[in-house]
Length: 112
Image 1 (cartoon, rainbow, N blue to C red):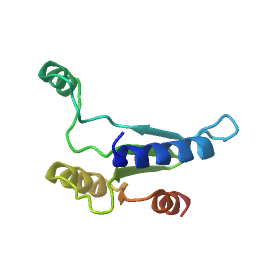
Image 2 (cartoon, rainbow, N blue to C red):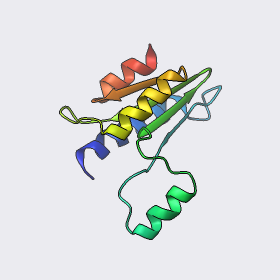
Image 3 (cartoon, rainbow, N blue to C red):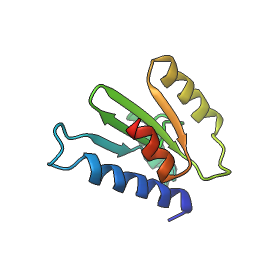
């Protein structure tokens, strides 16, 4: 796994174990959006035809009365143009969008 994947896995694991277990009422939801790294052009065409959108955030968190979109980047990582456009759309619709560079930063956003 590349370092960004390691960070994303840590974010998922922490959130899932903290808020998505049967002990949570209501149980929250966190999931990733795998919109990169296609193996074939045929696979890419199929995913685009079935609704894949370039630039969607890496992770989406659903809490009671709150949806948070999270783009995971390393310290020096920059958003691509389609990610910036998705961020602008999400914010214009009234939702939260964050570029997160550490597990601690993610925890601070989620617990605020």
